[in-house]
Length: 215
Length: 215
DNA sequence: TGGATGTGTTTGTGATCACGTTTCGCACCC
DNA sequence: GGGTGCGAAACGTGATCACAAACACATCCA
Image (cartoon, rainbow over all chains, first blue to last red):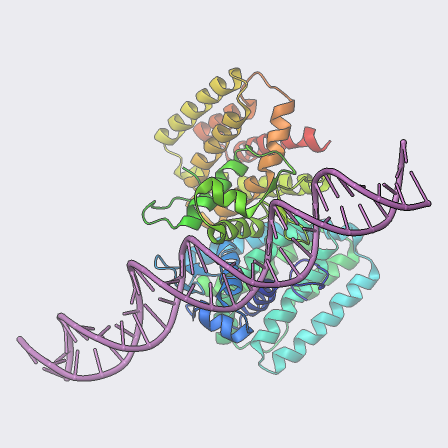
C-alpha cells in the first residue's frame, strides 16, 4: 500500500513502473547515487522505454530521482543542508497532520498504531532496515490518514520519497536495537488528547534520526 | 524567470513545453477545469506528442494538472477543503522561509521588495489579474530566495502551482484596487528585525486572499 | 419530443526506430 | 606504471505508427 489511496483497477504500464520504483525508493531499497537506465527499467518491468521514461520523469519531478545534464538518472546523494531542510519540512507538515488527526483519533486507530509499533520491534530485531523504514512510515501514514488532508499527506510523502535512499544509508549504519521511543510518546499523547505533547512527540520523532545523520 | 534558478542552456523540447505550461498555470492564465490535449499542446509548441506527454505528466505529478481515469488532462477545480489545505501549507512553509530569510535580509533586498511592491500597484490599477499574480509571487520568491532553502522553496512553488488556476478565479472576481496591505507589514518587520511580526505578517498575507474564496 | 443507438472522429498509450551524444573499457604511448 | 586517446557500446531524445478506448453528434425509434 503506497501513495494516497487509490483503486488498483486499470493501471497502465507506466503506472506499474512508477509505483514499483516509488516504493523501492521510499523504502530505501536503492542506495544513494545508484544509476538507473530507461532500457534497464524497461527490461526489468517488461515494458518498452516509453513507460519507463514517463515513470522516471515523474519521479524526477517529485525530487525522488535526479537527472544529470546529459539525461542520466540516479538516486540523489543529499547534502547535509538539504537533509536538514527536508527534516524541517517533515517536522512542519507532520506536526500539522498529527494535530489535525488528534480530534479524530478513536480507540481503534490507537490500537492499530500500537500493533504497527509492535511489529517494528520484530523488524528491528531482524536487522531488517528496509522493513524498518516501511513499517515506520506505515505508522506515520496511518496516523496522518485520519487528518483528512490529502494534499498535506501527499506533500509529506514527497518528502519521505526524497529521503528514502538517505534513510537507507542512515538506518543501515546505526543498527538500532529497539523501536523508536517517541512512538510511545505519540500514542500516549493521543490517548490523553494532549495536543502540545503530540506536537512535541511528532517533532522529536521526525527530527531525531535525521539529526545524527546531518550532524 | 520561473522555477528555482537554472541555467537556460541546452533545454530539451519537453522542458520548453513544461516550463511554458508551468508558467501559464502558476500565473493563472488557464481557468480551472480547462482541458488540454497532447496533440494540441504539441501543435502549439511545435513538437510531437512525446515531449508534450512528458511535460503534462510532470505537471500531473506535481498536482498542477489532474488526469481523468481515461487519461484526459485538465486544470483542477479545487474543492474548498483542498483550498484550505493548500492555504495552510502555504502558511506553514512560507512562514518558515521568511523566518530563515530574516537574518540574511540586507538593505538591498528590502529595497528590491519595495520596488516590486510598487509595481504591484501598477498592475492593480490596470485590472491585470495575471500580472498581479505574477508580481505577487515575485515578491514572495525574492524574499524566500534569501532563506537559502531550495527544497523548501520548491515545495512552496508546488503549492503556488496547484493554486494557480484557482487564484485566477479569485482575483478575477474581487477586483481589488490597492496593493496587499500585508506586504507593507512584511517589509516593516524585515526592517525592524522583528521575527514574530514577520511570521504573523506572512501568515496573514498568505491566508487573507484564500480565506474569502473558501469561505 | 425525448432518450437510446450507432458511427465517425479524436484522444491517450505503448512500441519501435533513427539520430546525436555520452560514457566506458582498453590498448597505446609517454 | 600511470595518464591519454580512441572506438565501440549504451544511452536519452523525439518522431511516427498502430491500436483501443472515449467522446460528440447526428440519427432513429418509441
